[in-house]
Length: 296
Image (cartoon, rainbow, N blue to C red; front, side, top):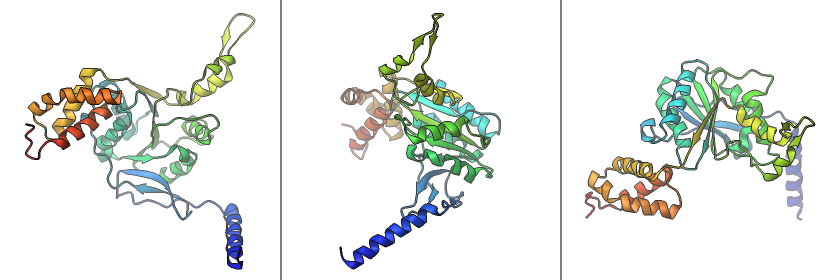
């Protein structure tokens, strides 16, 4: 190692020791007027974390989501209560992939942004920063939904306990202008194993007592006041969603009818009749049509 390399190595080690004893950087106020949606990001230079405005947020609307009417009514009502400063619940959306869980949250933002709703997307790896995010927005007049997409945990992950505390477990009161909306393919957010049954035992009186492991798994999902479950679509539902998106891309009724066999083949190849698959098919099919719109 050259003298210069030795110097640089020692300088880096010194900087690391100094950074370890310095207080964490205070997140800067974002430009709230630039967007309705934000992401929690870490600066590449190591200068702390911040809310990054999303300049081109999803434009999906509640009207674009079909065959999830019951779930749509519930989350729309909960969000309306929230923006009206009435009591409202944190929401957990679980179930089949591609059925509109994330899209429903984005559509709520577009439906209520004019009434002061804002969305903050937080990665699972950054859930430990939830107290900082809440402190950053606590004095704002807007209403904030913290959005955690595709949430699931493995054993021992730090974000699990951080989310649990943020939902309902801290000595600090929850901020009344923040809710958490999360999506997951797992109802209890953690893997369920056959070995968990070993935590059950029979008492002397014959009662069955749940093991602590199972109780721990359930305790996080129970902290969400509203649960919305999503299920795989039937064939007709899938075709209806595909037709909606084909129409949005300018296809004629005749072209939409002619697309049905290909839509079914597309779903068969993907092994799923989901809203996401229907949207992907519509993009492919409409994109292959001649520019004059003639499918012949």
